Image 1 (cartoon, helix red, strand yellow):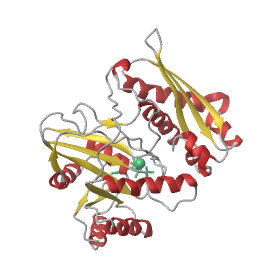
Image 2 (image 1 turned 90 degrees about the vertical axis):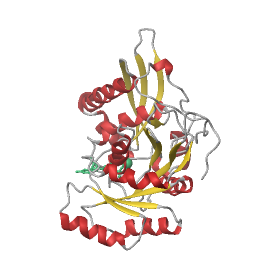
Image 3 (image 1 turned 180 degrees about the horizontal axis):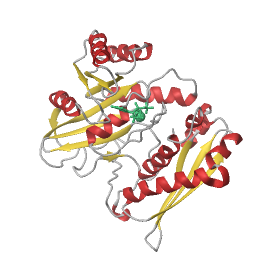
Length: 333
Ligand SMILES: Nc1nc2c(ncn2[C@@H]2O[C@H](COP(=O)(O)OP(=O)(O)OP(=O)(O)O)[C@@H](O)[C@H]2O)c(=O)[nH]1
Ligand SMILES: [Mg+2]
């Protein structure tokens, strides 16, 4: 496993804005800034665990439940996650870095191709994998393809059958039986939304990890540039309100975060859509949707920054951005 190179990007909620470690925009989305393994603290069991699976099975909800903090946004729309997001669980004798990844799917755009590559790339740097299935859905070709890739990569894999709160007992048992044929290291039924069974996953993971010094300070729970996290919070509010293809057509970039003399944190963001017709929807009648999303996102941002936030969202058209490599580069994918 690869553990070297650039210094970490540390984001820690609750600190005054000035005290954060800023590496704004220095890491393109999805490209991991791999932390230096430091000399901090005592030896603990530690390592990286990738969380993979089809879109919408609950990977991000699971990572949030494992870490105990909201490190990744979630939504009922498939393909919510678009970067590899690291959530850090610190316990007295362990530090586990969970890498939430985009849902693996048959790609139809340049973005889809990049996201799939990102997921498979994350497997090269991992000590273990959580392969998440949705208990309410039959195992399909998409799941089988992922299983084959994991078996071929000889990744130590724990299968997590999620959403057990929504499934019948016979559905759960059938899933476990069918997935059991892959003969992965362990099988754990959970409800990530309710936190049921999450401890059992930790019991399975911990023995897989080597002893060593921590990768991160023990008081942080995620590792992503604050600009990226802020943009995700804004996009999440939209995902819960937009229908059909629009969630896929939306990208949010935070252009600026600045603490003003008054102490207010000014956040300037741009919401990109692909077509003129979409711009009207994202703004809403008389700016209504933009206002609602802005107000909701601002609350989350204030909690994150620990102070008052002025949020300015502009909407721009960036035609077919999902399909254009140059635009994807520019938007940071
Ligand atoms: N009832 C129930 N809902 C869940 C559970 N886990 C996730 N969900 C819901 O399923 C939807 C998808 O969850 P996400 O965590 O965003 O799924 P994901 O696998 O990260 O999706 P992508 O990022 O698109 O690949 C959301 O509406 C979650 O609230 C669960 O255990 N029970
Ligand atoms: Mg996700």
